[in-house]
Image 1 (cartoon, rainbow, N blue to C red):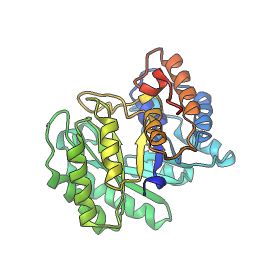
Image 2 (image 1 turned 180 degrees about the vertical axis):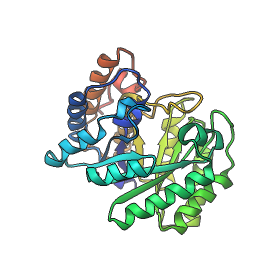
Image 3 (image 1 turned 120 degrees about the horizontal axis):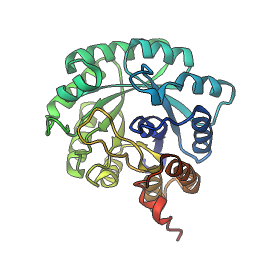
Amino acid sequence: MMSEIKIHEVGLRDGLQNESKILPTQNKIEWAEKLAQSGIDILQIGSFVHPTKMPQMADTDEILEYFKSHKPTVTLSALVLNEKGLERAFASQVDLICMGVSASETHSQKNTGMSVSNALERITKMAIDAKSKGSQVQVSVQSAFGCGFEGKISESVVLSIIETYFNSGLMNISLADTAGHAYPQQVERLIQEIYRMNNDAKITVHFHNTYGLGIANCYAAMNCGVQTFETAFGGLGGCPFTKVAAGNVSTEDFAHLLHRNGLRSDIGIERISAVSKFAEAFFEKGLQSYVYNTGIINY
């Protein structure tokens, strides 16, 4: 199982959305091409949101149009928040459409302007529509491990959302630790319960490193059989609609963890770190990735 672990690189979306400085389209394309050459499996190009609300993502359609004729060897993904975004995703012919619902009422209102129940009904319909049109779909539960505003999130709420997904035939589920509150024992408990609900579930995890437990949570998820992990080059990222926005687990750090365990030696950490170097220079700030700052262990 562990030999089949996949990396879903989300730095070009989650990593850039929390930065005030706008990365030019040509730079995004160049970074995307370098990341695609590193051996990762899925590359998130951006999100289909209104450009006035998130100008960092205004060129998502343009970038995906470029990749129609310059198809990389990786699966390309993008995030959608509403029906209009889904229409743009269809037009872009993106490989994997990602969408989700927050388990936190406060975060849901800040992020989407909807209650959890309203968002769940809307997203589920969108996901079913996308599947019926032949698209690959991933649905997520955001704030699945806690909320910066509300604190503890009941696991029954998270499981109820997932049960709705399962009942709608949606098996590709992402658990997002939006606030970075997750800890390993909680990760194990929740994932094991989801597999008990449906052994056919395809679980992805997305951890933020707000309190330094991101890589430990990844390892806990690995040991439970999770195979897909969302990470960001340099550890960039953070949800702008949570209380304390902090970076994702660094792709370099997670790939190094895999290397040290004799897994995924095909992933070129140096190629990923090269993109992080460009990001450090462009955004003029230090990055959170340990491996980027210290280098890899080669023996």
